[in-house]
Image 1 (cartoon, rainbow, N blue to C red):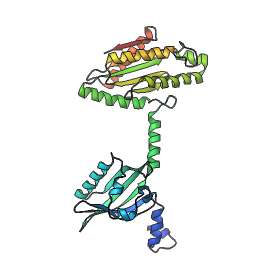
Image 2: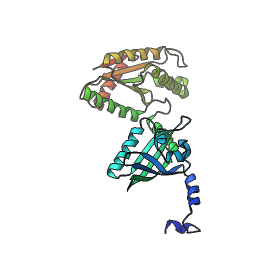
Image 3: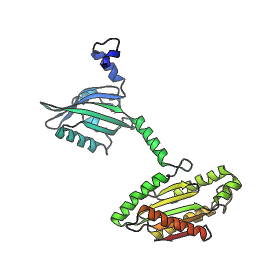
Image 4: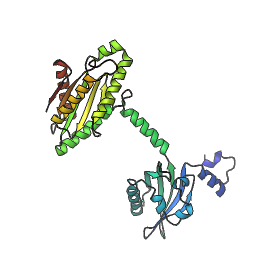
Length: 304
């Protein structure tokens, strides 16, 4: 069955109908021309997406520069490189980029255009679609997949991915890296005495206060229950120990809604050794954590 078989009138749509269809697209249809000297302009541009550009189509028909200048500064060179590859190899232009609107908003645009070699240069026939809502939803789902819902910290999945990245850097360049494992002491007693809702409040509060002590490049994750891990890039063992002591004292002195001294933490630290795999580093930090537990809790144990 052809596409027009389901239409009540199988005649080709007229230009007015095509214009109405294009205006209902969340984007635009276009032709982009590149002359032999590299000049770019849009001979044809139609659709609701033209409003994102806030530039008269008549102006863009002469010069595409005002539209290209709306590209995010990191996306502009990628788009120009894609155009150059398309000219050289006659391959389609495809990808997504950010466009800054007149009022300063950033919109994600997907583009697909097929090149045609013409006597005056290269002519692309293509479509741009506003995919900002799709990108936002993808970001939301990605955030959910990487985030612990109670504390807002990274989860185990994100921690392991980041740890692999940092270990790779440490192995290649011999830069320091430390891993800290933190476990709240007697947390079952907190839940049994003050209730699980109060226990959840303690975990969420701990996450907020710990983040205030960390650098932007550090990553704190909740591994599950009352156990946390901190990835500390560019941090030798001595610096990690000092941070751990500040964190331990802060936890012990804080009220957490149940009175100071009722929440304490045991902490184990391991500094990455060049050549060690991720599981080796995790095991060493975990061993030090449980050494702190066996040694009386509310203390920091570390090793190289």
